[in-house]
Image (tube, rainbow, N blue to C red; front, side, top):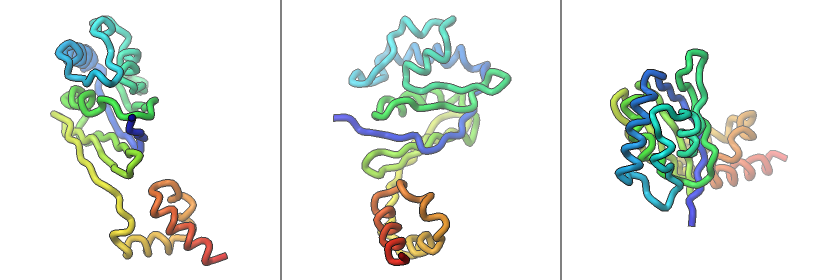
Length: 169
């Protein structure tokens, strides 16, 4: 059984000067079997010093986007199931610019963020529980023009928005 995830938001920067070291570290991690076998993991052969950097990242299910200078300034996540993102971003940690982050959401409402401090990655998790704070719910529901934009964030919030909108009709 798989666990579905969605990329919520990302702000990430990696200087191109780090690309050779990243490939070397990813290759070492693959050879040392740091990635769980139940997930798609690249074979060491693809992780050669002269490899196509974009193709390597795509093997890990992340497509890098580059700025005009060739540095990574964004990623697209093209999968739906959770994989080895924690291992992947742990390896990238020392090379990612400080204050970068990747925010993800699971099918069960769990939210987490990979935060980068310039030396390593730290994973922060939490659950959005809109029922636990009626003050927050009431403040959100008072912003009538914002309600359509908030639909889809969380099932319980969707129910409350639908109830509020139905009462006004």
